[in-house]
Image (cartoon, rainbow over all chains, first blue to last red; front, side):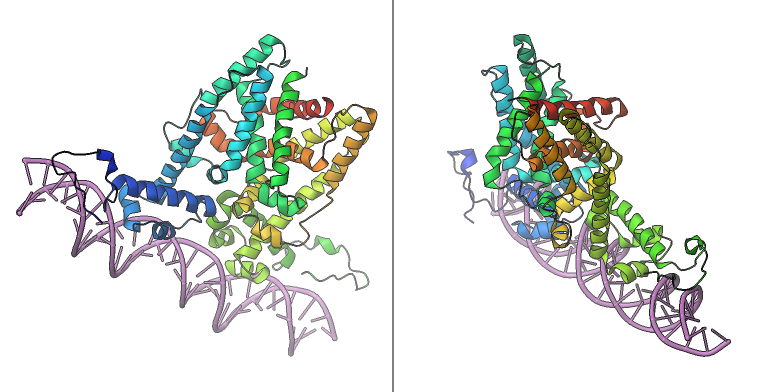
Length: 224
Length: 224
DNA sequence: GATAGAACTAACCAGTTCGTACATTACGCG
DNA sequence: CGCGTAATGTACGAACTGGTTAGTTCTATC
């Protein structure tokens, strides 16, 4: 409501202008956030552009103005989600630990991150239903050397050098082993619960499953 | 559905009647098969009833005649898919093997079955996107004691008795460990490929991944 | 071979959904 | 302070989609 006052001579903090009536960046961020929720909840086809618009503090027109259409919006949502996990992966700091502890800690951090971000898992599942056709067209997604993979590679090297790891494992394969476990627990929670009557994400089981993952990875690496 | 005619005296081969113009059971089976493909390919919301009807040798009206609607058709497709995997699970015969070999073989059979049935994995993924709301309402899906789980339980018991298995593992947990690996490879193939440039289902890698699963499970169970 | 009901067909309908044409307002800048 | 442009709001429509209405044909049975 209050008009911006940056005009008067001594421009204070440029970034402190708060209540802009018009703020492109903010509007786009708002749309992205709402769209992420809607897509994660209903799937790509199930998501409704009108629904997204309604939950935004702007209108449908803006979605088309800024993103072009439903498909481009979906791609933007996906890219933002992947950027988020990339960022989280770079925060991982386990290099100071010995190999066995490091790989266990890495697995646990992955576990916790997936546990905390079910929406991301859902977006990925949805994109897989669509054969990742959007992600494939998105430049900058493919990382032939991701930071995590590099990190895993270093841990595996150290473990093999120290003699603790008996197997010569491909870093990407180990990443898949860890991811599959973490992703399944979240992604297939509902059908698993319906079929076997057990909630994989119940609080009581969380620590047990986290430990089981660490045990599994360590057991695999440290046996011949 | 098709009435039984075993009543009349000398009816020859009842099952050989070939070119029926009208065959309720056949029509339903046809619809189910086409619907399975369409749902697996496009997802529940993305699937089009008209599209299913078109690929069937009957019309849309018949879908509503026999199944009631899109949602009930989806449920029928799901139930049939689960019935299929249940049947396959009962074919598993590994009790004659020693515990270590048995659990490895079980893991490999699960691996192969998922490898051979990507559509089933997709249907499950899709149902999870919808929070398994359909499966939850479907009676006869919940199996508090599934045959596979019982089988795993017996193998684990034998392994612990013989001293080969060092851990006291819950059968359902082990099933999850195996499933997560097998499912991820198929379900997340596309995004994984887009991000890391590796096709998890490539023929060259299949044997390696099958062996890795067996190694992982055995390593986990046989270490303290 | 008449008949009743199951199996089937074609055309249609009402609600939805993505997208857009057009009008309008706020903002930065000189 | 006025102007050009970026940003935004309103209203609408064409195409689609799940579902239905009304009517037809086949087939088992007596």
